[in-house]
Length: 329
Image (cartoon, rainbow, N blue to C red; front, top):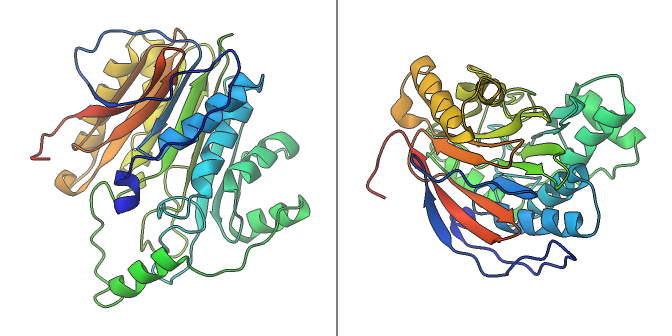
């Protein structure tokens, strides 16, 4: 998918949090200095750059960290060039786009939606579940009906031009062989820390391309795709959801940080455990991104190719994460 490989830049309007517009790719992994930043916004993949721009703008306009992580990923949900997030994303085997999303605050409040159709902003629906219902997760038709009751517009159910083209090509063979770092998979997860130490996170995706109808990945599962605790830190995940669910990846990382691991050490341990719990690991990509309450951060992946966007007062950059296995490019 070429869209994630393109570096996107958007204007940033902010007040006291204004940061330089220039950014560059960096390398990140074992042995990295333990930088500390408050506030700090991190998100997965190249599409995290424009998402972070929006989140940083919200913080700069005196918005909450929760508002920031919601509004940030909404940018990606609307990006028609991105085929891994939002209604324009690659469909399931039946040719239907179904979406998953979750949102969480550092006080334990959380909400999510899974297998939802025709809703443009599943992240905002997840926040409604968190704030306005006694539940954590709504799924399928129930999630769609709840969205309607909350005034969300129901979008026409049709594939975006890019997704339709890819789907028709896939149907020629209907072979289910997801491509690492492309269909395997480019979720956006965002975690943030404000100047007062409050945290929040968000995660949204159209799920694994050409999945079975009804499949749900890690993104809407609190503790798998996302976990946030103001007392410790936050983590989010991207990649093959089944592999991440098997180890409750994001919760694992936060608990490792609670025990004294740095964010980087915790991400590396999560990757180690994921490898141990999954077969055919050469065909699996999964990456983790974490920060702690002091503003330290870390990232690590199974395979090369995972990167993340980082915004703080000193600047913004796209960073290449380290990986357990090494490749040729």
